[in-house]
Amino acid sequence: MLKIILVASLMSYFLSSLVFWMYIFTKKKIGERVGFSFFGIGFLLQLLYIGIRDIQEKSFAVATAKELPFFLAFLLAVVFYGLSLKYKKQLRDFGSIFAPINVFLIAMTLPNVGTDQQLYKNFWFYAHVILSMMAYAFIIAAAVVAFVYILTERDLKKKKLDSFLVSKFSSSLVLLQDIEYKSNVLAFITLSLALIASSVWSSVYLGKHWIWDLKQLALSFLWIYYGFIIHIMVIKHEKGKKASYLTVLGGFFAFIIYWFVKHPIY
View 1: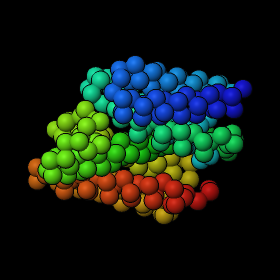
View 2: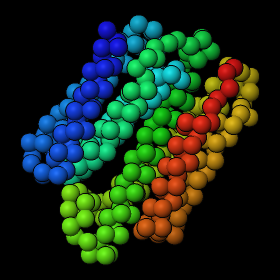
View 3: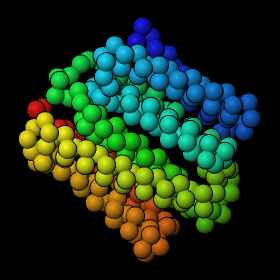
């Protein structure tokens, strides 16, 4: 049953990707509506999967390392819907980017359904995992938007009005900068809370206020880096291409930390 839901969710995002890209090139409104609908079906199926797993395990079941990509995909869908609601239909074009990312993340989860030790079934561990994955979701969103901003700004400066991003995407440079800034702020906040939750968890369950492992240090570095980005944007009033390059670099750091830096098993 759970594998059927996983596959159905993956296929929904896959169909959403196809339809959104058809819409990008045709600009027919029905493509936007259908792509958004398939994205919604994928999101609801993810929500159903998480609900069933939680009921079966009587805990927050997708907090296992094997299923975190699935949970990250779910949070990216939440971010996408939040942006769509906030900015109405101006950002639905970005479904062509978020949907393929979710296809990739869910595909990594297909063979994985597992349980963890009691040490990992408590509020503070769940809080750390949820907040960390929310931070990754905001970091990805910020990096994607910043990358689109850099390329769009370059094309506009060169007066390439028929370029792909200028002609196919409807978001303005001001809107892209605003989303990039807010996503960076939310990434910093959730990273802060994730590190606090981790400290409480290690103190209560491991008898240590701080875990000196590579993953924890890497997340701390990421937290400092995003604090620096926000300082540059707020104090130095830097919100142009230079800030966007820093945001994209932050996304690259997060990618390295997420995929290649692992926690030890306690």
